[in-house]
Image (cartoon, rainbow, N blue to C red):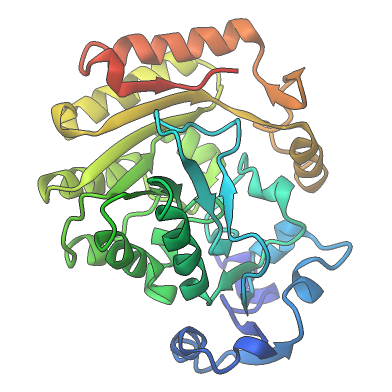
Length: 339
């Protein structure tokens, strides 16, 4: 059977929008060289395309376009309350790309952005300079892959390699690369760096198949994580967000059995545990875009602008997973999100 996109949609990145100010930037040229058949459209500002009214996130995700731009204004952001700092005092995140090639139904990006097209900011040097200024005053724990999956874009933009090289030069910088990707070509051609944490988001296979479209399987993610651990890398396992499904306990138990079988739990840096939660405003936008998605139409509890599972269910799910993890790793290595 033919895929719907074969008949009705353009190929992946068939059109690339480029801000005039970065048309000759070296990273722009490297990226464009990988898409010789793409139609290149010059624009004044990425928001002219990205923030247009009445866009369909679902349709755009079937044929995503690429937008190359310069990041301006604020370059680093303080860690959000719904995210975990893992005990780090100076917790920040950076957005060097926006949106993801994966299509997880519960992803907050669908409520945060008006478009499914991918924006890549090519002026990494400005972000690096801002980080160095901040490092003069205090150490920094920086999440670089919240607003996209950078490792999934590595063959296109190569940013993970650049971030690793930059981090290797700064002892007081620690970065987290959050991913669901399985990029074996990257894993097999790199040098472990002490300041880099690879954080794999893990879900039961049932959840992956139902809601995490186009992402690697649980087995593939664990295989990649295990390979990084064997190579001497710092690896974090993220059971966050936990997603409610019927018979959730059985599915999460099966997931844990596979994790314990494939991963040397004594070698991981730590784990995070947290049930699904999201901004009330983001959820409203997501429901407008995805009227048939069971995962985002759950009757959530609202509290201080945040939507989450009812307290009893949230406690059951998180306690179950935490107690099972405590059988394999010390309590101090388990970071559980708190309201």
